Image (cartoon, rainbow, N blue to C red; front, side, top):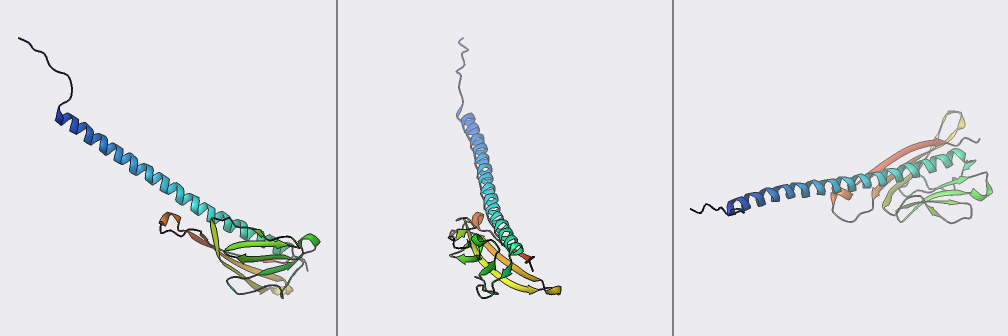
Length: 172
């Protein structure tokens, strides 16, 4: 008697293995998409937050170093405000912060305007307020609103933040 068995897979075994492989590949694909989505969201949040911190710190540092506030050259209590500061260094006098097409800019002296925010971020609010403190100190409160520059409906790229800070002009 010939007791020879053929080697290979039956149709049922093949379908079982194929089904298991499809489930594993599906799980790996979902995991990969999740990781990429999380990475993109983290990048968006970091970009907006970093721009907010940098812009706010640059404005507040300049206010602290200023000799005086140029009230005539500034626009207060408006969402697209302008702040003009008188500086002791001729190359930086005046120092002007403004908003142009969603970009926070600084102009020092007669130099060109320089962007303080990246192309990936839109500044939605730049508001300056004058504060009077006891003892005649002059202070400026800055409100800054930023969002990620996206036109799509992808929620991964929708992020906005705001920052507020106050600085006192130290030179009297």
